[in-house]
Image 1 (tube, rainbow, N blue to C red):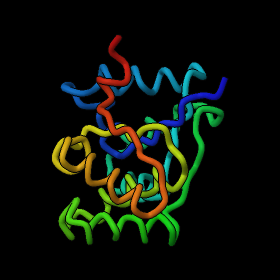
Image 2 (cartoon, helix red, strand yellow; image 1 turned 180 degrees about the horizontal axis):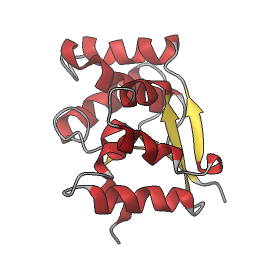
Image 3 (spheres, rainbow, N blue to C red; image 1 turned 90 degrees about the vertical axis):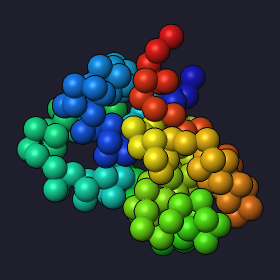
Length: 152
């Protein structure tokens, strides 16, 4: 059986060290550590982590390589992200948030997981991302918080 392909953004990694979010964030990464799912980690996430404290950067380094698949912010994903902006799914100032969803969509993730309730995990935005995906030939994508991914 194919493992669930879960794209995580920077908020999930940082959430491992935030009292409010750490329980669910760590539980999600533990599922990857135990081979229950594959984490899609993007070059964009890695770039964003360069500005994070060393303890946050260490979260990804502590995961086994077998639980991670690296994915890139390429021209195709950037084009889809800009489609989200043109469709007013997100404002121009949220290009990197659009890029996270686009990278996941282009790389056939099953779900995007984020704590970003303003720009990613929000009903109106999810509908917009999926409408743009269908219009441009991509499949719809689930978008959830870590809590939704680990609670029974």
